[in-house]
Length: 313
Image 1 (cartoon, helix red, strand yellow):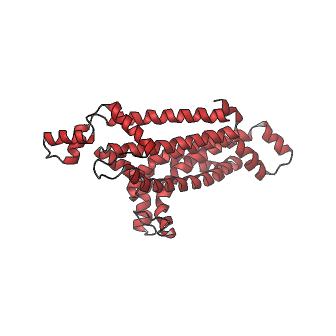
Image 2 (cartoon, one colour):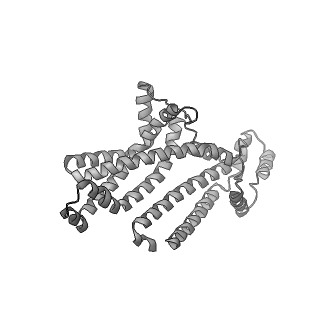
Image 3 (cartoon, rainbow, N blue to C red):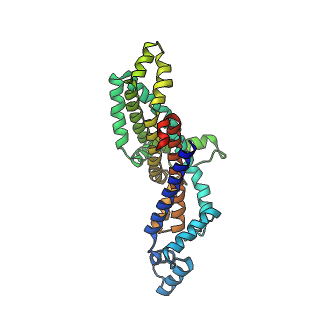
């Protein structure tokens, strides 16, 4: 088990370095454009060149990346080219918003998807067909379209929830719930559709196994049979689907946070990328990759614990 964890962790570190360097490489070489954006269109050539030197963008790529990489270990991710704000400070205020959005969505997705997926596989018939129909529709509709529809329906036409803004739990618990209701709902449509379909398929496969027929013959009630035996043996595809949904939710959060004006890393990433704010973009990429890798690591560990054969991968 320990060796499996070490192998997975080493793999994750390699992915983190590769993604970070690739992002840095994509943004490298636009030093003049960045300097001109900061100074304005009327800036002369001398001022632009001076700004490039001031920002350190004239140095070789590997030197710039090495300095950024070294700053990770000290917590210094640099400062925004435009606002002068420390990247770590900006992330500290925005990451909790995105994490809250994702965690609430994942908890609700897990509960509903397990119940719906198991019920669809167990009951079959019209209920299973209805679940598959809505799962197909839900998976096909982008989160930002759902978000726009929800805003017009439940914030404009029916002013039940705020259309924009975010309230922290410290300010008001009811306000916090209200500010998250529509964004979470927008993300839930696709995540529940994809996860419940995967769980349904996995449960159907497990129900055809010989050990399930043996347990039925021994008179084990349906409830304990499904949730104690069948669901555990079907957990692999379900966990994998949840990890993929988490990655998808991070992408969806970029658009959902824009629609609802939530001060999360999605909104920060969009703004920073548009104006070429390299330190801020790299900070967002670092946090996002770490979040994705943590989810993948937890998924692998859970699969390893439930399935000993996975320890040799």
